[in-house]
Length: 124
Ligand SMILES: [Zn+2]
Image 1: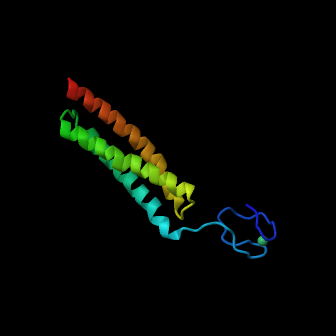
Image 2: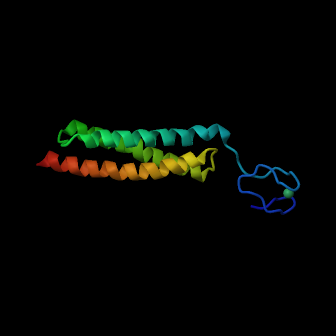
Image 3: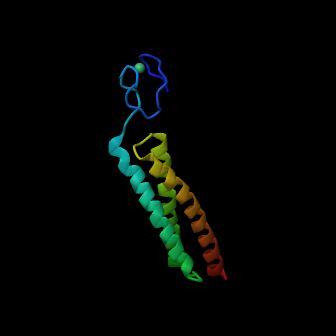
């Protein structure tokens, strides 16, 4: 971006212009750092949960399938959405949001595979 005062090219995340010291219009939502943190923590729990379900050779009871479906929303869809929110709003610590986005994408696939497999054995 460029300084609105002197037109010097400045870093996207700079709070002040290096040349004239004018404050940039970058919004710093420091109070919102908890959103990328929460998304990262949830996505990491999500990996552990996927692997713990994966260790059971055959899941074919309705309760467990419903639990997996619930975990899919809480540990994959939720951190994925919060990751997008962090990036869109340029929150402090949005790199954690990016990491959460990547992790929860893959765990999401893991959950879907688990659900398909366990639903298969539930029906047979
Ligand atoms: Zn300037």
